[in-house]
Image (cartoon, rainbow, N blue to C red):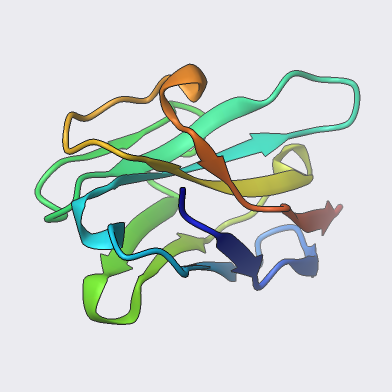
Length: 124
């Protein structure tokens, strides 16, 4: 399994931006589908974005589409989540996840490696 470490979370005002990073320590990063999920207080974890190994396929949740960009740098074993026009409802713990397969998916159950999460708080 991949070891994943997220960074870049923090406190930001509504309308602001943050860039989350997730660095993997395994040897199979470039062959994995990578995803970002989030969990708000009192809610279930939900899909945010996912990207194929080549970056040729990308999917976003409707709630973030147009405000969020996922990207990856396979040479650095890192996946990014650029978040703009942040809203208070984006407040959550954001998790990076790896799916050890080139077959694309947005389902939480298909991702087997998870980071510890990074807190994003958006104030109104």
